[in-house]
Length: 311
Image 1 (cartoon, helix red, strand yellow):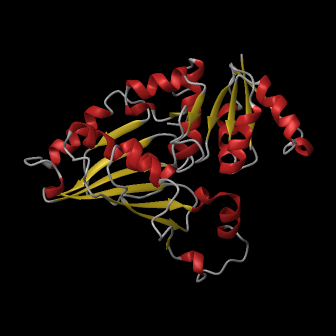
Image 2: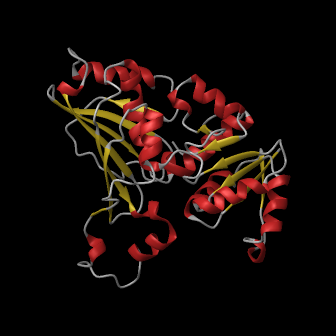
Image 3: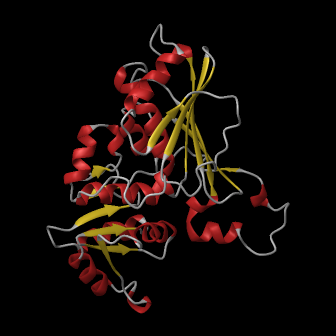
């Protein structure tokens, strides 16, 4: 039985991970009393007693927490932004290919992808690798997310009792206007782009769910590429993926929260032959955070990849 410690279990991501693991008979969850939750010595003891440690912490705290792990056998799965492009860390998106899958399965330091980045990378990487998109393409991406991705403070603001229907939070809010969003480095590097995309994240007044869209003109694609070619490329890339399904275009509205509470992702190619929309929909707390973290755990300990996940 593998011993698991969640450092930062009281946070949004930690709570969802704990929920996914609680019912499992193959795992033992190590916990600290509330009074010791932030005690460095107590946390270090738990980290080194565990087979796998989840870090659900702010970036700087996550970096400091890694230094607490002295046990060479302990696997660290970091859900923060701190290590997604750091040397010595593997990127926890096994669907990107056997190299990524093997790195997660055999790795001791695993970085869980960012929520927005998960959708962008899932859409862009196969097209760039196949040559349907050139690596010097200048891409745009907009991403609609529920407020739960902002953590406890944002959740409290949106769910405050007595909120007015006309307050500032009632309308969608575009943020990170300076084009310095913390997910941009991994979006560029993991997808394989020469230039970061123009990124437009938007948070709206609903709790969970994410819809990441890359709009494309046909002229941006390799000469002679049709919409069907794009769909085929993505379908082949994820043909054997347990948590990613590629669906043909429909005319129904693309609701951002359709996969609320789930740990999988759906990809669609919409639009027409001249203007395409590549769309990834998933739960920002599922395949965008906690679900992806548990998927990495399963691979790291040799369990079934979807064990404990909600599909």
